[in-house]
Length: 225
Image (cartoon, rainbow, N blue to C red; front, top):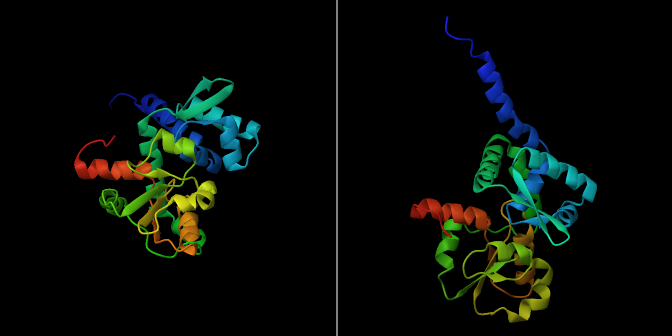
């Protein structure tokens, strides 16, 4: 008989199970998704998720203990961000495998997006071609702090809540391409609906900047910055 490896197995899998415990909450998955767009204060996260600051703080503490996020101070605000790029990789993989396993995710997503925009969205690869086209304007309709953290090169920052007020600044003779936070965000579909209602040629991208960067990294054989 070989050595008893049970203590080794128990120790290793107990540590790995910390990930499952930390991510085994819809609220905490949503918080990670929001933090993948850039650092945010507890107050902003509470507003975005429609939770109390106390509840958000508790969830963040769990993520902090699991080392999925990091904490720092910015003036009087408590700020959180993902602890590493590998956490983003993990989050995107969870979303990919989740959609593969559970058809209900795609069904629910389409039930919300289809009434806003039923046309076929562009892929990240198609967007990579269009960003070089002088007849195309790419709009980032996320909050401005997320645009400032990272955005697709050449994109204009026009947060959804400001779109109607700033629409006159958009050229009517160009194709408008809108993107937001990714597949579980409705901002781009809402933006396209508004733009088309005002006579613009508009289409959305299904992926956000994080997916676009990874797609370009694969196609170009390196990290895109």
